[in-house]
Image 1 (cartoon, rainbow, N blue to C red):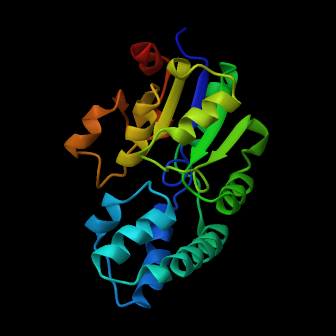
Image 2: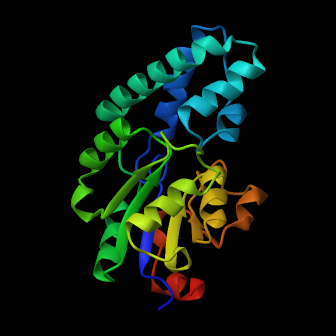
Length: 219
């Protein structure tokens, strides 16, 4: 078998948090007179919060001195929303049981801050199954840079070419591919037909759909 390790993204893949991220950003951005469209939100999905804020504050001429404050406000707001309203994505139990049965090493590589990662990991009850948890929030580069995936593979003592990654965003997919890993994308229903996701090694509609046939196809 070519693969012995699986690394998961978190937001939008394991937990249905992307709408909550958008809500939190909209609430904070409204204080600065900015309202993003769904297309604008989608274009920066998968990035770290401060980079997301920097991009749109620059576009809308908001002084850079307010970036740190907005970044912190969005993180605080989305963490509270996820704690109250976050729900596991379909197929979460299936995908973890699948790779546990195959004795894969399992890691998580997220752009989110560790504060939110810890909330999600405990809310989903997956901490006992994760052998490495890596955040890009304090790294020099975030997704689409591969650093967080490379770090996670190193923590798992895994060769990147033996790692299978699951992502839901284009920026995350690029990060995984740049790390020389095989990437399975599970885009949202609204994004599923976008041609850019054809760059993935495999595209599926739900974690629930992954099986031996697809794994062997990748191998």
